[in-house]
Length: 450
Length: 174
Image (cartoon, rainbow over all chains, first blue to last red; front, side, top):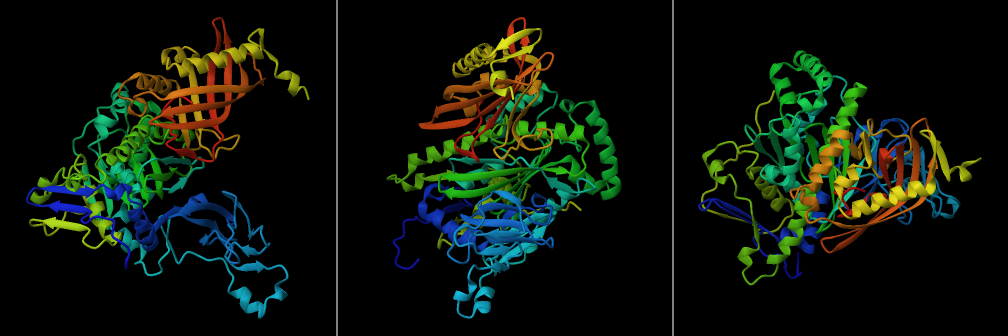
C-alpha cells in the first residue's frame, strides 16, 4: 500500500486456541478502506457468480447486471455461446446496453452509433474512413470480454483476473453440492422470471454470516417456527451440521427446519404432494442409488460459494447473489430454481412455499435483514473506542468441539470461521490474522456423499 | 370506448357500486393499516382470499404460481402473516414501522357476476430506525360486494420501483 497511512488496525481476526475464542474486528464491516480492498482484491481476483445459464435460454437473449460495481452484459450470442462483456462502449466508455434484459443480435451505442454483434465483434463504425488504418483499428475495438468465464451445472462464473485457477479447483467440494441440485430432477433445473431484487443496509459479509448461522434460527424466526409447528411439522435442531468446505465456502446441513417440495413431505404440503413425493423419491433412488438419493433428497442444504453466491436448497431452491455497494449497503438478487416440466400443482405449491420463507416479503427473511441491519447500526457503538480490544465480534461457538475433531453443529460458528480465515487471506492484509496457542493441524472439511 | 365513464360505477352482485364507495373502502383500509389494526384488516377479506406482491421486474400476465414473487399468500398464509405481525416476535416490525398511505387514481372495471376489479395508485411512506422510505405502485384488486360491504378476493400490490431500495423490505402490509 506504499506510503498510504494505515487506517486498518491489525489484526482483523484473532484466533486463540488456549482460550478457544475467535474474534473478528468490526472494522471489517464498516471501514471504507476494507471495502476498497475487497473491491480490488476479492472482487477482482476471485471467481464471481454472474448468473444462471437458464436466465438466457435462447440465442440473442441478454441480461445486464453489475458485479463488483462493474456493469456487465450477460448474453447468449446468435450461435448459442454464453458471453459476459463489460457494458461499456470501447470507443468512449458509454454504457452500451441500457435495457435490463431482452433479445438482440446487435448492441448499438446511442452516443456515436458504434454497433457490436452479440459475440463481441465490432459490426459498424459510422464514417470509419476517418480512422487511419481502419481495418486494424476496427479489429482492436471489439467489446471487452471478462477475462475468464466458466460454467458449472448451468451456474455461470466470471473472473476479472485471467490468472485465477480453473473454476472447479476454486469450487472444490462446493461443486458437488451444486451437482446434487441439478440431480434432483431427471430433466434438470431452470430459473424462473420474477427476480427478487432488494437492497440491505448492511455489509455483505453479514449476509454471509447470517446464512451460515443456524444459531439464530430459533430466536430470530420464532414466528416462522410457530407457523411450521402449527402446520404439523416438528421443528428440531437435531442432526444439523455446519461444514467448512475450504476456499471460504461453507455448508449448512439441515434436516429439521421444514420439508422439501418433491423431496421430503410435511403435512402443510397436502396429500397430493405426498403421492408425488413418493413417486419422485422412487425414481431418484433408481437413478442415483439409495445413498446419493438420501443426501440429495432428505437434507436441506444452505451452500455458500465464496464470495457472492448463496444456494438455499431448502423448502424449494433459491439462488441468492450478493453485490456489495458500500461498506454498509448490499444489493441482493434472488432467483427461484425449479425442475423443468414440473407438475403445475407442484410448481404452484413450490412457489407459494418458497416465497413464504425467503425474500424481503416472506415470513422469515425480513427478520434476517432486521438482524444484520441492526448489527450494522450496533457495531458503531465500539468504533474508535479507547479500548480497541472490545471492538470485535465473537465467533467462538463450537471451537471446543473443533479441537476435539467433532463435527460442528449448525448452531455453531465453524462455517463462519472458515469464511473469515479465507477472507483475511483474500483481502491481502498483512498480519490480518493473529493466532494464539496451538492451532489444530487440520480442520474438518466436507464429507463423502457419493 | 366507454372506459372513461365506465370507471364511475360497475354493476355487480345485483347492485350498482360507485367509485366513491370503493374509494371509501380503500381509504378505510389505508387507515386501518396505518393504525396497525390487523384484525380489522383481516375482516376486509372474504375467506379464501389471496394477497400478492409481484417482483419489481413483473410483467402483466405473470402468474405467481409460475414466477418468483415477493408475496404469494393464500388464505392460510394471510392468516399466518397476520398472526405473525401481531406477535412481538415479528422482529422486522418490532417496534412497528410508522406508515402513511395515500391512495389515488381509483378506477373500476371488469365486473363479473359477483366480483369486479379495482385499479388504484398508492404511495406508502414508512418511518423506521431513523430512516424514511417511500413505496409507490399500483393496486390491482378483485373486490366482492357482500351484505356487510365490500371485501377483498384478491389484494395485489405492484411496485413501481426497479428494485426495492436499501432497507425497504416488505415486512409490513403494502
